[in-house]
Length: 179
Figure 1 (cartoon, rainbow, N blue to C red):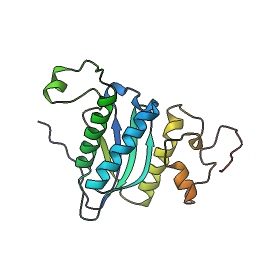
Figure 2: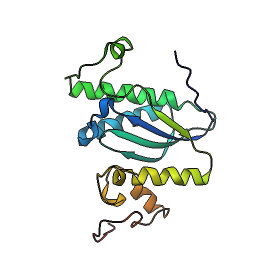
Figure 3: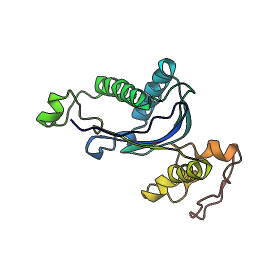
């Protein structure tokens, strides 16, 4: 069995990437985004954390999570999130992809990749770098031409806080109306 080395800092801020199985675009469907939001809310009631930033793309998610001061267990939260979303998703979408014997043996479904990627935020510069990465990711993947055009992102929240200007990463040439 692999021995994964993950940094655990109580009260830390973590950049997380969670990917769907075979990069299926589950989150192209708005109802699946609502299922995800519901799963996150349920996890937060039992295992509190703060979402500093987020972006939901069709086949993967990026988060910045701040954990409580005495807690470092982001793995448990991600596991619970995957379970809750998968149950809700399967209730509405019972058809399955064929999965490998290994996935079947480990009781894994066809919804999420087995693992996730994490990075512990070290300082303010590292935080800013990951905020920029999250908010520019829809542009990087060719989903929109500007960050302000992607609805499933915390970008507008950070604009409202004054940490970004609305035209940050702006290339679309459209008139920006702040409503």
